[in-house]
Amino acid sequence: MPQRIFITGYGIISCIGNNIEETLTSMLRSTSGTGKIHHIETLLKDELLVGEVPKTQDELFALAGITPAEGYSRNSLLGIIAAREAFINGRLDNHRELKTGLISATTVGGMDRCELYYNDFLTNDSRNAYIDAYDCADSTEKIASLLGIHDFVTTISTACSSAANAIMLGARMIRTGRLDRVLAGGCESLTKFHLNGFNALKILDKHPSKPFDQHRAGINLGEGAAYLVLESEESLKKTGNIPLCELAGWGNSCEAFHQTASSPDGKGAFLAMQKALGMSGLGPEEIDYVNAHGTGTDNNDLSEGHAIEKIFGDRIPCVSSTKPFTGHTTSAAGSTEAILSILCLQHQVIWPNLNFKERIAELNFSPVDQLLTNIPVNAVMSNSFGFGGNDTSLVFKRVDKWASGQVGK
Image (cartoon, rainbow, N blue to C red):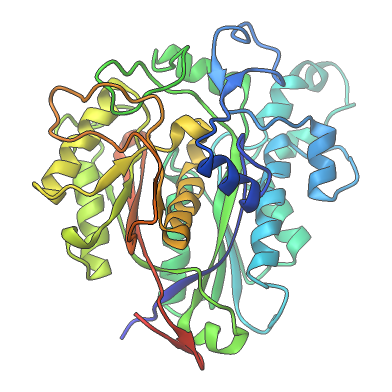
């Protein structure tokens, strides 16, 4: 039988919290972290709402435990903060003989500093340390160096499915015996380029986003980082870690329908969910909650909604998008929402789809609009769909027993 994959650690930072505990508190209070822009000087500052981490560069250095130095982008600092929490949580500093990898996702890389110091690059050499930081792999290398992970290090960049693909690749590396443990996830900071690019596509909402609502008007962008520790069953027997849950299935498709839009019938989303379910061995009726990609755009929500109806038929589980809490953290969304999905399994809750008022006319279901507590949540699906039709779904399920190194179903 193929190796089972377990989650044994996690770490997160976003506009709703600097760690797992703060994030859980915000979610249980149904508190959104989106608001006005404070840390970017842009003409859009008073127009757009974003999910901005409420910390300055110096405050992020302090949270990361690093002395302020040239060459560290905001993106790298967010990644270091979340990755270190997961590293400690999953006890990766123990059993160094186990093959351990880092797979980190990002798209903007160190663009936040580069766009700030671009004129210095042209006129003097005072900020050259940030030129290398522009590369997407820079944040990955900095995380790997600080945490001492060297067995395998790589960077994934597939837009909004990036972090989910990092988790999927990590699971595949364990399945094939290349690694025993993987720190996988993603980081993304807000930038002017980021904001202007999405604004040019005319898919940003100037008000709080309302995914799956008939009157949805677009995205609120966000920033943050989130990482999971994936561990094989054999590794668990050596480390003695207690699994948070099992990564039971994953699926990816690339429908390539359009550079930015999803296909109207949701074919790519359907294929990703179908593959993840098939690998998990679960039937559609056994999924208790779908953390939808749910960006709040006209195209995505209708397309994803059609795919959900095709997968689940007339027995659609609870569905919601958590992006109104955190903003759309783009390349970090897959791992951010994976962690929020795992918290549902741990605490037997289902997160509400904030700001929802009216069902989409073409769909036969509505998202959950209030916090549900004390209900059975045994298996969840987390969807992350990227530009170009690169769509990924992950299925997590509860682990009921842990005794004498044996993982129960």
